[in-house]
Image 1: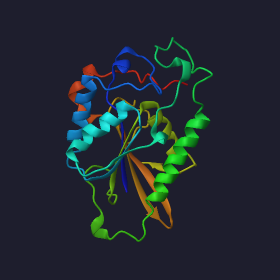
Image 2: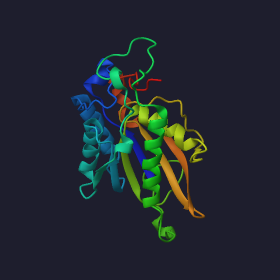
Image 3: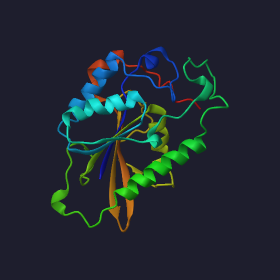
Image 4: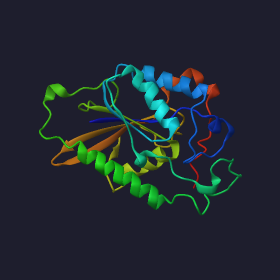
Length: 231
């Protein structure tokens, strides 16, 4: 199983440095262009399923990608929602300002992320071993994981947190050679995760992180600050 995680496209709040969190903001025109670039990159990838945060900036990004995959169902999951930042949402963060007391705690973020991922993995346990001729990979340069390929669209702070989570002892996934986990999580950047069912459990590897090669000629217009990643 091959998971293609993507951050949503750009919003006007991203451009202005405004904290969004659970604030429901749409893509701007540049974000729609970014999403179209992502869609073109994934055009030839056979996407069997798709999941998104319920916030409209993520949902619209996923819908743009799925225009090339009209038979794929899109499901919204609260577990993929951005970290809530309470009274900081809807304004710029002051220099050096920490997350407010009414922000969602990392314990809460971790609990709902784990609940979502555990449920997701449980629902995808194979009933029987996949035959070798089902091994398929349009995308990863590191490995050849079996189908299905699954699209998952979320948010910058959520994805950064989730990367740490799956590499922690909680899941024990590994980092493939050459992958730099310190790369920033720009709009529509990709994290790709290979999951294999081995000896009755899921084992996985992070095969890519922070991948924005589909935006290479647009980087002058990209927002450099990941505004919602507030500690």
